[in-house]
Length: 345
Image (cartoon, rainbow, N blue to C red):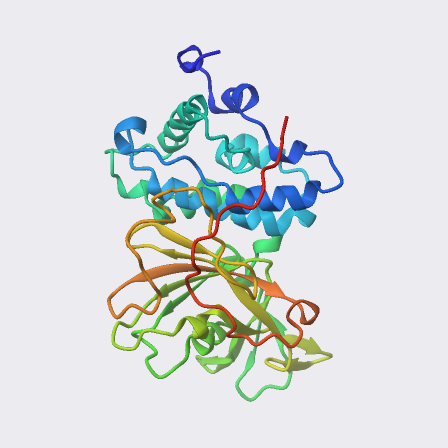
């Protein structure tokens, strides 16, 4: 079947006939193979002239979703068929990425179909940027709404001079879909990045009442970060952070006694739709494949210029980090090639 023969097919049909889902791998090393493919394969590089739309934002999002899927493989036994039917991009993120000429032509077609779902008004509509795609209602409903991504597990309040805390169900209803922490370093010049994140879970006195948001310890923690160009952070400062996990012992609030260590696994530079991906507590993951979302103009969170980022963290246990220093690895790692091939036939 050539590319022209599926011109009128929908995305799901094309995926059925032209792609191979890596979740079909069946071997003793299947889990390791899936993790490897998800982290090191990249969407083929395609131009706006070929697809009809700007594609770097989509490529960046697919790289991110594949990376997060690689960490969630133990949790992915749940049936997500309904979500993937509503949002075929999620299914696309699970596909093996072949590099043949015909495979690239298939990708040109499916990228166009995915981007058309956003109803862009122009080739470079802002809807097609990473930020325009990652928080659409469709992506929220089908991906970020999963329980392992929920930021809050509850809200509590008590009078300023009161003794007992009460569940704040109104705040819970209003905040449950706000699962991204927003940090603007220009507003908190005297606070470290870690403290800016932790503020979300601090005690706050508002209108004569104490309020606190309880962190659900999500499997992916998201931070939208605006840099202060006069005082940019070091990579060490943002790579690994401690987040307070507030809880109650009886009626007594333990706001900061328990903390979880989170490690950066992806940083997206929103100004250019470029992404760096990392091992938890480890170095940058560098594929030998080329895509403008991962290559191109060098950038760093440490650059002394205006810039905004989406940062994605996963929790690590004490067993995983042990006595490893928290600043062991640099922001950018020298290029290394993929070490082996995996046969999906």
